[in-house]
Length: 269
Image (cartoon, rainbow, N blue to C red; front, side):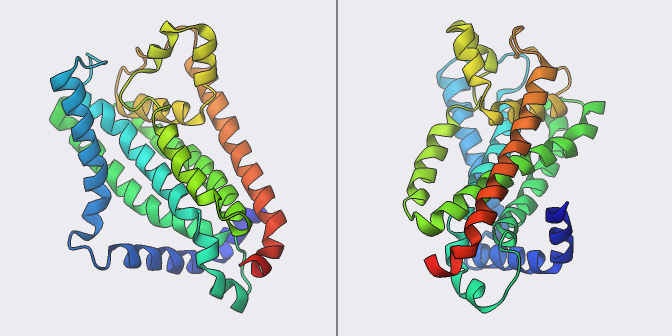
């Protein structure tokens, strides 16, 4: 509750910091905000070409480009928000030393800047689903809740890595490598059921990855009838419950570490 109160009290500061981040990032590129769409779209095109043209698509009932897009946009938000948050506290050293404000607002502003692009991307994706013959369903009403859970997980990890980076400057490189490896452990271009062919143990370990549940929930909300690619051994309720609990635990851990270490930020920076 204290966090929510602080976010509301300093909402103007968060808005200004997020606006500054967006302006700095897209001030000079000619295409500006379009890059936020072009990067994941380009990756979608690459995976579509590999699996639909060169190889056999791992999914049959859904257009493969749509299947990838429903996971790629959420993943890109997660990757950019966490990746950009790593050095945000260090980069704001001069501001931290001059004026007091809740330091948590710094990573939250970075997340907010990326969230704006993500929400716009998802809105366009929902609109374009009709071009692929996919009808909207009642499941769309849970999309804001899925985004909220996704946001909670992202915020927790962003708080954690940004706090650790202040003292341990190698964290940036660990996160960069970790995000690359993590991408291939998320069912972006293959179904979750693929893990079942190895063993039930591998499947269980795979589902411990909270981004697996996040991606599944996005597809469940956006694609009517989706659910056939979830193994029988994994229930929708169990995966959803675990994902929600893990996301809020990540936020709790991130806040705990950040608040414990922020008293030394000025000295370490």
